[in-house]
Every structure is written in C-alpha cells, then in structure tokens.
Length: 593
Image (tube, rainbow, N blue to C red; front, side, top):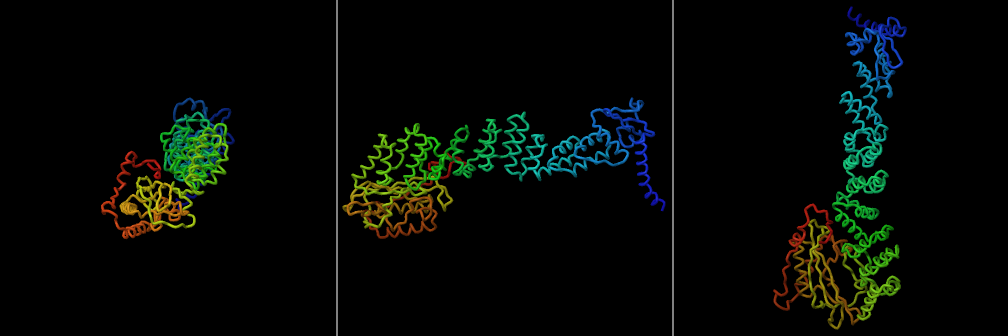
C-alpha cells in the first residue's frame, strides 16, 4: 500500500521540484554560476547544469578555471539556442520550430544533453518534407543518424518533383543526385529539370561532372520531341558546346531507337544535328534518316523544311530505290519548288536533278504543256535535249499518250495503259526474253526469315503476229526459302515454255507485253493483295496450282532437259554478301545490298 502511495506522489514531487528551481532561477535566488554568450549572461544553478548536462558535470568535477571564476564563456553558439537548452533543463519542455531546430540540436550535442538531442531527432523525423530533406540529410550525416538519412531519402523518392523545386535542392551533393535520379518512377522531364537546375545553380561545377549527370539520366530514352524542343533549346545547353554535343551523342547512340522515333516533323532537325556533329555512327544515322525521307517522299516535300535541305539530299531521294511516290510528277513539282526557293544559287543544280526524273513515266500531255513551258527547262540545253529526245522518241514510235503511276510500296512502275479497257490478247509470248534474279535484304511481310529475291523478265522491242511492241521489263518477288525456290523453278519453266506473258493488241498495229492473266504474280513486296504485294495468305499455293496447270498442257518443243532449269538457291549467296555485317548491325533491314 505504501509503495502505491509513493509512486503516485513521486511525479508530483518531481514537478514541484522543477517548478521551484525555475522560480528560483527567475528570481536569481541561490544562483551560483553564469553562462555567457555574446552580450547575454544566463544565471543558473550548478546542480541543475550538472544534473542535465554531462558537459557541465565534467566541468564542475574538474579544476577548470571556469569553476573558480563562476562563469563560462561559450563561443560560436546561438544565444537563443542556449536559452532554449537552459529552459529545457529547468522545465523539461521545449518548443521546436523549423528555424530553431538545427541550432538547438547543435547545442544539445555540444552540451551532451542526450534527452534533448533525441527529442530533436524525433522532431526532424516527424516533420520531414521534400523541402527540408537536404538539411535533414546533412544533419543526419553530421551526427551519424543512418535511420534519419534513410527516412529523408524515402521522402525524396516518393516526391522527387517537389524535392527538385525546393530551395535547398541546389545544395545536394553530386554523388547523392546521381543516386536520386535513378529512382525508377522519376519522369524524364523531372530528371532533366533536376540536372539542369543543379548545373545552373552550381556554376563552378566542372563540365565533366555535368556530362556525367546527363549520361546518368539516359537521354536516349527520352521522347525525341522533349529533347529537341526542351533540352537542346535550353540556354545553358546552347552556351556549352561540350554539353550540347554530349546530349546529341546520347540522342543518336541507339540506332534502333532513332528509327522508332523518326517522324515527318523531326526528320529534318535530326538530319541537321547528325550532319553538324562528328558522330561515331554518323554515316549509319544519316543513312537511316535519308531512307526514312525516301519512304515518305510525298509527305516530306510538303514540309517547309524540305526547301532547305542540301542538293545531295535531293539527289539521294531521286536516285534511291527506297523512294516511294505515287506519280513521277511529284518529283517534278518538288524539284521546281526546291530550286525556286533560292533560284539564284540553285538554278545551276536543276539540270542534274531534272536528269533524275523519269520522263518516260510522265504523260505526253504533261510533258508538252507543263514541262516544255517551264523556263528552267527551256533555258537549259541539257534539260531541253532530254525533253525533246523523249517526245521525239514517242512520236517516231507512234506511242500513245500514257500516264504512268508508281506502286507506293516498291519501285516497280505500272503503265496505266494496262489498266485501260481490255484489248484482244494474243497468247504468243514475245521471243528473246531473258530472266534474271537478284537477292534483296528484305523481311517480307508475313515471313520471319530475312531475305527474298527479285525476278526480272526483260524483252527487246520486236514484232509478233504483225504487232509492233516496245522493249519492256517486269519484276516479280518471292520469299527466299525452299518453297520460294520451288516456285521460282516453276516460273522459269513457264517462262521457257513461253506461257508467262502475252501480247495485248492495242490498235491492230501496235502491241504491248503483259503478264498472263491466268498466273497470279506478285509485282510488289509490300501492300498486300490490294497492291499486288505481300502479305497474302495462301498466295504461294495459288501460284503453284496455276503454274502446274499451265505446264500440264505444255508440249515441249525439244528435249525435256532444254525446257527445265534448276534454280540455285539464293539464300547462300545472300549470306555471303552480308558477311561484312555483324549480327548486331544497325543498318536498316529494308536496305538492299
């Protein structure tokens, strides 16, 4: 019973003792020591100081001068922080704020007031935010508080964006910033803002350190739109050529990523950046961009930036087998548009570009009324000769006015006269035709294997059954695999049997070579059935059936050996031609080698 009474009285006695000591201090009664800070002097009781602080306990237990003088002078400490600590010794209470917590922690550690120091750490833990994390981490490092540091870094990880916006952010150490920007959920926009904000605030930082930070945020994985419009347009980046070069090199470091991000709006800017930098893979990058432009020819010529590209780019687009366009006149109008943008300096290039336009694929009407009336043509002897030669050739051969279009997925041109009303077809295949094959570095739609081949059938001009016809050539495409080889053999046999082509009677005097309508031949690699290309499930089976049906009614004119041929598979030759390429080659898979 007595122990219960004592335990209930003890706290009250402690409170009474504390309040009494505080009252005695305020009345300066029995004060036997002074703590001086700057121009202030705090009168205190030695017993209270010794009981609350190990620092003072050791002082009073020694023969230090301060003991006999009755006061101690404290330097390099905050007056208010000392006042708060003395108040805590007498009352056990303290009011922390964001402004006084650091000086109070410093004094409590100096005076070895363990209880107050622990209260300071608890306050910091309970008041963590992205805006004070840096100061808390610095305090944690100073006083070896690993748990406090970890908790502060967790706050940074959870709200990195607010952390970057804080006033204390520029004071973060580079090594810590390198760790923070690796947090998986940090967006590219925020990580870039972190790097550029830190770099601008720390102007004395070496360029090498900033480049290290830029590399750590993996700029090549950023959206190209953000890099081009935000990163490279930042004034800090523009002023620092080494940093700008580092950004551009990172941008082009992954060729496959460049292919994925290329579009009509950025291809011109990317080409200019690639040309102006000494990139280790510059040739590959420029080739990828040029091929993209070629494949999107009719879209890029509508852009204003097209008018500013180099003459060499124009020549590439006009010569490239990758260039896709619907009509040859697109190249004519694009050439005029480009030359007239800067007529004074570019008109000397017009004849070279004009020579690359296939006039044979343009209608006679257009040549006579549009091309012939253009002053750039009439004032150029070379251009005028090319035009006149084409028109006279048509006149002397009796060629009708034709318009020709180009399949949008290949370079195989289709004469529109083949799409006009049906004329009488002669079953006679023109004589003296030749067949050749060429390996292409393509992945055909619907097939996983790399490789296909192009079969070219060519005929000289001639006369058959009183019909005059012009020289012509045709292309067909098959996959480079065992089934494709088999079908190529059948096509070769059908061609030798003179069953693959016919002559179309145009006007009773002239004829035109056409495919045998009973044999389905793919004249394009891409576009599906609508464009007579791939993918087309079941096509190879249909082709095999039609070829075998034709050959089944064929009676050899000579020995069977003379009417058969064995196709040497081109797959091995394709591999031999590509030995110079590594397994991880960055060349475009659609490039023809």
